[in-house]
Image 1: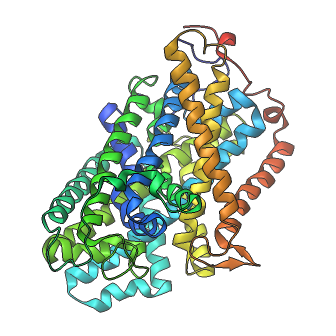
Image 2: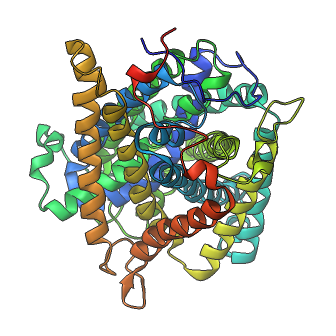
Length: 505
C-alpha cells in the first residue's frame, strides 16, 4: 500500500475522536434522508413519474463508484481536505483549488436549504402542538422566516464549533429518531395501499425500477440530478479522517455503510409513497405542484394519523437540524486544509485549543450560509427549488474531478492486480464519466427558464445563473488568491505526485 505523502500536513484536529459507527452516523446525518425525501420525492416524480425508484437506483450507482475512489485515495492520503488535497496531488493546484471550491459552495447551498426546511418544520410543528394555525402561518412571514433561519444556523454553528464529541453525541439521537419514524411511515403507507381514502394510489410494478422507461433523456437527467442530490453528504465520513480511529480504513467503510442505509431507505419510502398516493399531480399525488416541494407535510396526517403525523414533522425537523449541524464538518475542514496549504488566507488555519475544531472556518461558513440564504430568499420566491437543482451541478463537478483524480493518481498501480485495476481505475472512471455526462446535460438543460422553478434572469434560467455564476465566482477568488499566495499555485506547497513517487510505509 502507498504511504502518506511527505508534504501532507497535520492540522491540530482532535485525533481518535470518532469510531466506525460514529463516522457512519455523521455520514447519514449529513445526507439527512428524511429532509432529502420530503424535498425531492415530489420533484423527482414530477420529472420522471412512476420511474422515480429507478432514478433513485441510477443516482446510487455513480455515488457508489465514486465512493470507491474516495476510499482508495483516503488510504493513501488521510487528509481532511479530501477532494481538494487529492485533486491537487493528481492534477495540480488550479484544478484542485476549483474542486475544493465546488465542495465549499455546494455545502453553503445545501446548508441554506437545510436551514430553510428546518425553519418551515419548526413553525409547522409549533402550529400542530399549539393547535393554532396562525402560529404555523408565521412561516409565511418572510421576516419571521429569515430571522428563525438565522437563529437555527447560529445554533448549529455553535454546536459544530464545540467539536466532534459534542457533534457525535447529538447525532446518535437525531439520526435514530428520523430512521425509526421513516420506518413507521413506510409500514403504515404499505398497510393503507388500496384504501378508499387514497384513490390516487397505484399498484406496484417492477417496471418502476427500469430507468430506460423514462420518457425522455432530458427528464432522466433532471431526475438524476435530484437523485444525486439525495445521496450527497456521505463524504463527510472522509472529512473526519484525521479525527477518526483507524484513519486509513474506517472512513471508507463508514461511507459504504452510509450508502447502503440510504439506498434502502430511499427505495422503501419511494415505493411505499408511490403505491399509497401515486406519482400523479392530482390530490395527494407526489407530483402535485402545490405539495411537491414538501411531500411529508401533505402526507403526514393522511398516512400516519394526527398523533403520529406530528412525529413525522419532528423527524423532518430533526433531520434538517442534524444535517445542518454535521454539514459544517466538510466545509470547515476543507477550508482548514486549503488555508493550511496556503490556498486560502492563513487566518483559517486556527484550530480551537480546547475543542480541536477549525473555529474560524466554522464561524465563517455559518455566516456565509446565513447571508446566502437571506439574499436568495429576498431575491427569489423559488430559491429552494432552484438552489437544489444548482446544487446537483456542483456535486457532479467536484465528485467527478475526485473520481478522475483517483484514476490518474494511481495510474502506475493499475497493472499491479485485478483489484487495483477495478477499484483504483475502472470503477472510479465509470463513476466520473457518469457524473460528467449528467453535469454536461444539466448545464445544457438549465439554460432554459423552464428548468427548475421556471424563473429566469435576463432570459436565462435562474438555475443556470446560480450554478454557473457560483463556479465563475470561484475562478475570480482563485485568481485573487494566486496573487496573494503564488507559492501554492506554483506547486511548491502541495506537489503533484503518483504512488511510485511516495515513500512506502
